[in-house]
Image 1: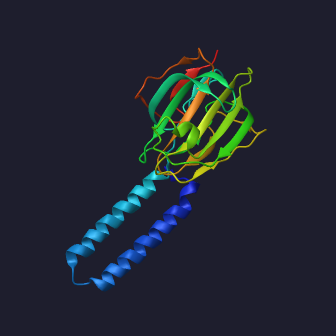
Image 2: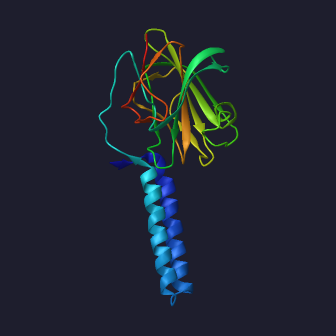
Length: 219
């Protein structure tokens, strides 16, 4: 397992904060042993939490020409037909994956193809499970066209804790299935919009892994 590049700055700042905090405690409360040890333990716990959030575990990815692979780790919170008004402007099958702070937060391309559309939207920070978060929160929208002509839309959505969405794609890019297309910090959600009638292999509340779990099969 390695640490993702998006974590380098945050981890460095966390270490600086922990060092300064412990130095102050040691200087001001040198005789209060219980307080010093409490701060030591809390500092260690904080560092471990930050470190695990940016982990990048080694994985054997699953690929397939007609397969749609889960773009993120987390839990399936939505499987339903809905109106997609930004790009398709018609009915689509929406699958949403909620990522808690303890999940790996790397986002991976669910299919291979050409990026036909990309847009970043500044917005609110509603809880990621709120239905309005899909259209009102800070988010990105990516549409990749499969080799068979089928477009798939996926959307990074910031949550109540997430304050930064990172993306690595732009219109015209040719992307590979399971390769990284972005990262979201500290809790978030990814929505995928598929053609109505697409065979979905997931169930509500199922725990999935990005780049491994097969989400659906394209016709």
